[in-house]
Length: 90
Image 1 (cartoon, rainbow, N blue to C red):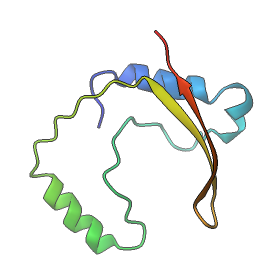
Image 2: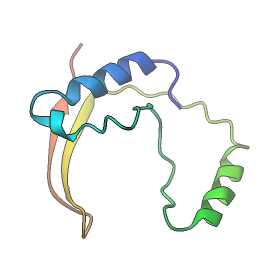
Image 3: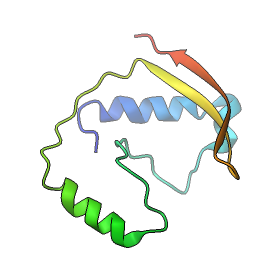
Image 4: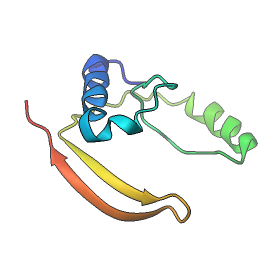
């Protein structure tokens, strides 16, 4: 989970989902800034195993967000149709 900069990440998320993207915000889910280590939607046993393993790591990760990529993905094939990079400025 993101701790330092969490408020700024939530603010960025909320700003992204205004205007033309407003209809895509998932208001039933609270946005929680995080780093995804994997996705295990069908193999819950594997998820539990990985979760137990990473809890032993000392994950103190720092990064600086300076750009955002908007990606259009076809859900059926999970293929990227197009992508656009946006550079963030202070």
